[in-house]
Structures are given as C-alpha cells and as structure tokens.
Picture (cartoon, rainbow, N blue to C red):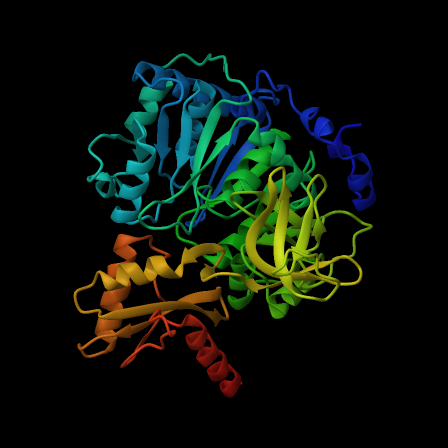
Length: 517
C-alpha cells in the first residue's frame, strides 16, 4: 500500500520510509521533474486549480489545460533562448499565467523564481540582482519596480502574451534529473544586503511529501485550499506542489485579502482540507465570519506563528474540527505536526504536535545536553554533520508533545511573515531625519505580532512623520515589512558595548501590556 493510503498516527510511524516516499512518484533518482509529477501524470479532465479572487470571481484550470499550457510555456522559453539552468522570475498573483509559468519553467529545465507581488523596488532589485534571471514575468503595474535591473527581459502577462504562448506547440517532454536545480525561493525575512535564496532541486518534491502526508494531512480525493501567497514556502510547497503531486484539486486566493470572501470561498467550493496562516483564521474570527452551515471541512492546519486560544476555540466551534499546528522553516521544511485526519492523534491546543517521521529533533541546553521534559532549551535538528539550530526555543511535555517558547534571536513573525528587526532598523536609519532606530516584536490581536520601531529624531514626532516613515520603509523593503507602530524617544537603552538593548525595550512593552490588562 502507498503511504497515501494510511491515515493514522500509528501507521505513519510504522510504515514510513524514504523508499516509500519515492514510490509515490513516477520518477526516480536518475530522472525526475516536478512539472511532470504535479501536472502531466494526472487525469486531464480533472480540476487541477481553482483561484478564488477577492472580487468574487473564480478561475478554473484542469490538469489537461495546465499540461498543454505549461508545455507551451516551456516551448516559448526555448524560443526566447532560455537554456537549462537559467532563472525565470515570476512575479504574479495566483492565476492561470502564474501556474503555466511555474510548471513550464521547471519542465523546460530552467529554474523558477516565484517573487512576492508586494516587494518594493529595493526588495525586488536585490533579488533580481542576486538570482540574475533571464526573464521576469509580471503585470503592468508591477513592471516599473524592475527598472533598476536592466539585464532582465521583462514580459507582461496580459491577454496578448497568453495568446503568444498558445501559439506554441502543446507537446513537450521534460528531461531533468532529481539533482537538477528546479527553483529558487526567497524567505520573507532575509538580510537586506544579501537576500538568501533557498535553492531546491527537483528531488525536493519527494521530501516535501512528508509535510503533505502528516502536517497538512493531504490525501487523494481532498478538495484542498491554501490562501497563502505561492511566493512563500507555505503557499508554494504545501499549498501547491505537494498536493498537486498527489493529483489533489487545489484552491488558492488572489487579490486584496478579504476574510469574509475567504470564508465564503471555503464554503462555496466545498473545501474539505484547509491549510492557512494563523492570521487567516484570526482575521475570519475578527470579521465575524460564520457559522459555517453545511461546511465540508474535515481537516484544518495552520502555520506561521502560534495561534491564540480565542481563535483556536472559534475554529473548532465554527468548522467542527480542531486546527492542527505545523512547524518548520523554509530552509529545512516541516519538523513538527499534529497529524490532521489521524483519528488516533490527540490534538493539544497550543502545542506544536510531535515530530514528523524520518527526522531527528531534540531540545538542547547551552552545553549541548538534551533537556528533560518541561525544561526550555533550543530546538535543534540532527544532520549528518551535527546539530542544526532552528533559532527557536521550546520544551517537551511528559507525553512527548512539543511547545514553542519564543525566538532565540531578534526575528519578528507577523501574520506568518518573517521579518528582520535589523533590516527594518537599517532602512529607517537611511531616512535623513532618523538619528537612531530600534525595532522589536510586540503582540497584536490580529497578526500575532507586529513590528514596533523606536525612533530618536530632532524632528517633531507627529502622526504625519509616522506615516512618512512607514511609507519610506514599505517602498524599500516589502509592502508588509514595515513598523506598524512607531514611538518617538529621546534616547534608546544601550548595552555596555554601546549596542541598542532590545531586551529592555521588549520588557518595557511587556510591562505596559500587563498594566493595561
């Protein structure tokens, strides 16, 4: 029996093996292509993708349409002189053009680079200069952001472009090995000067099936939705590639986010399996969505940041099933999960779940010793060359459930996006009226955390200046990567070495929150 036939936690531990993962695919270690596995081998008449737009429209692509269109895109790339290993950047919302380009690029043997549509000019320029793509496919309103990357051929994904693609032959045979490069993926929180691309080979589709099976609980026959942007790991690997590799019908969300529209789409499209950021659930709760009469939901999962207890309770009462945590990073994948759909797994509210099969995790103290139950340490992943730090703190309880105890560094996780405090600070310091700046994470009812900046300036610290600084940061980083709260200060606390002491700032905020409750 294939791994996808097993649904229980006990069977996951009993039957999992790396060889069993490979048996889910047509390809092998010698010859494998993500495009073929996700598109070509599935029944052409079946629905592959549905895109729910914020305006209420829904676009649908069958596996047959996606196969022909991605083949045509692959042939178009060849006609443009793109060669195996060249990068092709795709800066589009979920749409037919996005999926044709994503899979067509990988079929052809080029490297797909999905880019977030809210990157500002500086953020986009840094990534284009880093991955040096031959082609950038985007929309007219986003194209000007690429003006500072003249080496890139920019193509606009409009009706005329899609007609040009349709003129290409609809047959194409992929020819890549499992070790060929397939995709570059940029994390949401990278050092501004040197944004790191996580580089995935075609064999990554095999590894990510661990998350599909045990963290999102995807199985053949599901109607699966992930509203996260496919520019990020959750929306791309867990929301698109892994379920499609099983031939599962997926749904995505495009356009300005509206929680009521998402809730309605879940019900209208009879979604049975939903995986979203904690913020998506929180925003639906805060918007007063529900009840979900006639909902088809059977499995729910979340990622990005811990989910608050009020939202967790709302999810259970609205959809009738518990929402399951999935925990991991873009660099190493999913490590802990609550096994959605496993009848023998007790989902514990607030916990990260238990390790997925095939990996070795531990919680270590500063001396490298394993922490006993209920003692906080640093979460570590065992690799061939030793322990790898995840940069998160956590503990295990006596029953083997894992719990999150905060970040081990100054990273801010807001609405599922990871942001660097230093990156925000450096951008603010580029403003001529900012003398000093510090950024920390503060609690937020909707986003879990938001970035708060403390600014030292000789200029009047009024609301107009706050808005100016926020826009200044948005334009240089990404639309989501800015301080949603700003406080003007006469000075910033410093360590003996003269560095800004963010811990004092965090402690002050915690005291304020405690005093206000």
